[in-house]
Length: 156
Image (cartoon, rainbow, N blue to C red; front, side):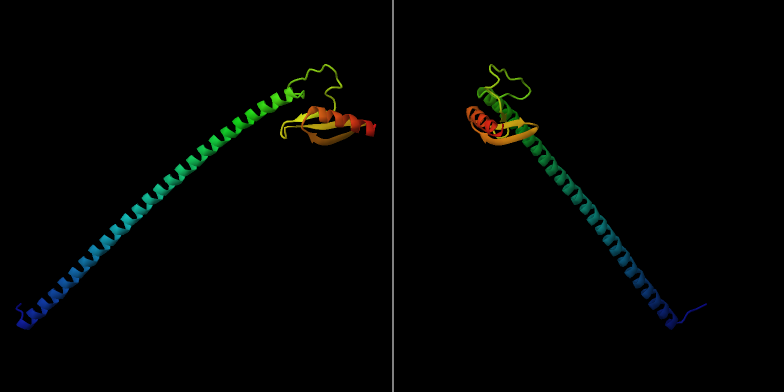
């Protein structure tokens, strides 16, 4: 079967169109592949950034935790020192330290007050007929005892 010139030209045009179509498709496929690769790379970068942020957050939390631990230790040490100081102050003024019995020569000397460790003062406290009376705070045990004797005499 022989083809005429016109048929050959038509076939060549058709082949050229098909080749152009294939070229366009190849370009599209290459572009799509590049886009997919770019999106993959973006996702990988996003994941890496997310991990870095999480690591930073974890480091900050750890620093905060360690700092709070240090402050807790400092506060505990301060409280311990304060207790020791208040204990020695109470002993010096004749009050009774915590967890220790006081030694009394005369029971009336230290009656009617106690040493408040939080406020670092002596508080008057006594009971008459089942009713408890709590009065003010005083700087010295002598003041507290004097007030105790006065109030006890009034209410008795």
